[in-house]
Image (cartoon, rainbow, N blue to C red; front, top):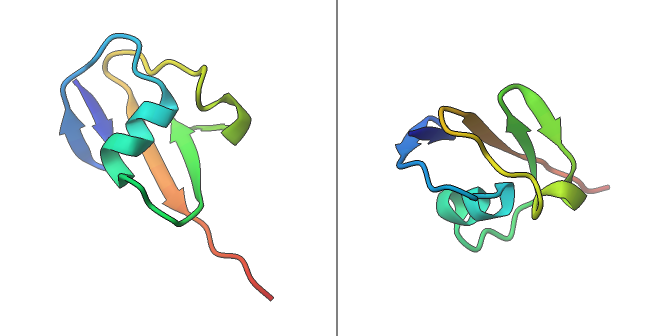
Length: 66
């Protein structure tokens, strides 16, 4: 079992941060910061960072503009 943004999901072996983002946010147009067990994950590493069973994943929306 893993948590994504406070919701529980069945653990899937090999699930990456990118996959978790699609589960939690779908096709969101917003930019997000990813935190895996309290550690920020660079966007460039989302496709290769595998989420271990029992993890807590959080996606934090960011705002930008001028």
